[in-house]
Image (cartoon, rainbow, N blue to C red; front, side, top):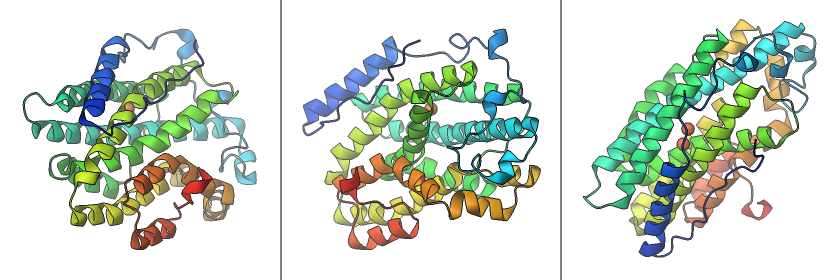
Length: 322
Ligand SMILES: [Fe+2]
Ligand SMILES: [Fe+2]
């Protein structure tokens, strides 16, 4: 299996022609390199079976929770189950996010005039996301665990994001990057590491990063092309709302769900040690947002006021560090 991961296409979209030809290339890629959730994943191969006690699910020292003495003191089966539970909850969250994304993309596409190249690409992306969600849900089902995914409040709040696809697509695509960029960052790190990854998880992640490279490229290009055309007032709205969205999402995505905390009785002090008082974990969150943060700087939507919000959420880093 190839170890080279597809990366984003160059996004120089300074002219309308360059922007349209990028969208045409991305659309063509969706035709020649796409995956089917069932035809392209050997679900019933005995090597792909999910055993919750499999030591390959265990968290290692690179993981904030895995590094704690509390985690290391758990029985092997519990350590493995906690690792698997984190994966399936992230997948459930991912497919709930993709549901919002698909509905928002359809809203966005419904506003486009005949002949708009974005229409075709948006539909390719909806189709690909539907296959991702089928893969994630199938994995969750086979794990025999029952993760809730996003916290309830976030699920309710996310319904408003769907409408942004029609009313304020620039904010919608920044929300999209806020979800896709950190996950892509985490999955690429996992795939590049030398850890023994379960083959089913590896297959799903490889399919995912390949197609996400195109989605990220489209979202970034859309923003580079359209944010400069927005009114001053709309750009101010982006400046203030984006750090709220990113800060809230990153905070919940990269730590255990409250259901996991209850089920495994993870003490509050352990969570503080692993996440709140851990400079490395906090840096990891900032790193996972680096690309979208740098894009916001490039788009001119990090203002003096909004930078304070980024800092308050603990997601700011100076762009020079990139
Ligand atoms: Fe996806
Ligand atoms: Fe995507």
